[in-house]
Amino acid sequence: MESGPAIFAGMVFALFGGVLLLWTAVRVRQRQPVAQGVSTVASVTLATLTAVVALALGVWCLTRP
Image (cartoon, rainbow, N blue to C red; front, side, top):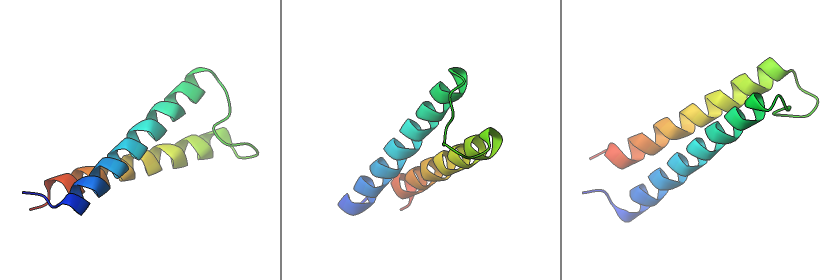
């Protein structure tokens, strides 16, 4: 059984990662910049990597014994 703080942290990480991934996909689909003044490839890559890491941390927090 997970503890309260682990569940909270896992949900925060998962929510942040999911929303960031969704927001990045919408911006790319609409051909709008993800970050102002930065290369499109670099900003999409960094945002996607951050979202995936946050999702992985969320899963880890929710599945650890």
